[in-house]
Image (cartoon, rainbow, N blue to C red; front, side, top):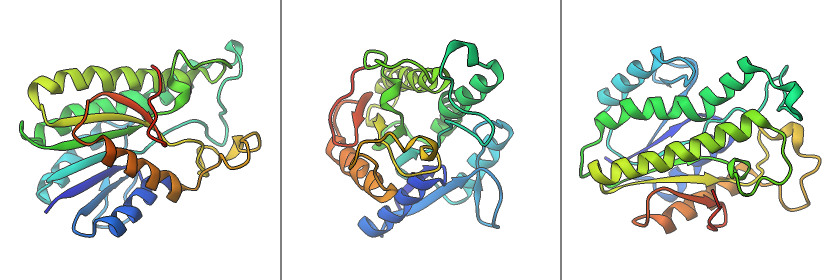
Length: 233
């Protein structure tokens, strides 16, 4: 049985699961959640490395056989914390938390997850990045922690793609920008989104699945938008 593993159960992550069931019902969907909410849930908290091994053990127990892995988690704000508009608003603890969720946690988990992946596996691994993580595209400034975390994620993806080209030559890594999507992550910032540019989770998931299909078998380490266009680093 082929598996799709989705890291994260938010709006886009859930839409990925739903669309996979429609498009490819033969594929088993495995989805992680940050906290236990049922006996069969796969728990993974990217800010808590103690959950990494238990997640790996659960995947082993269900004979994990992935053809695609999608990291769909993300942190931009909380009820009490908003993205920094200026340098004077920078808070080291908050920036560290954003970096952990958006960049360091996913790659630290990948270090353990790759031990389950045979060297000749044909596998696509996608990470939800963001256009604001593009250094050359940054024209507005602000959002220090989020921008830095997505730029860091992009560099980690690119670096890992080079390593895996030697050890796992049929594994493809992609950084994907879903566009501004109507989820909890973007909700406080939707007022300024141009008409027609706020996507539903279903639209974003469908568009990105089309992009992944179109990119399959191609160059690893690409940074692609929801419409398939390349984004400059």
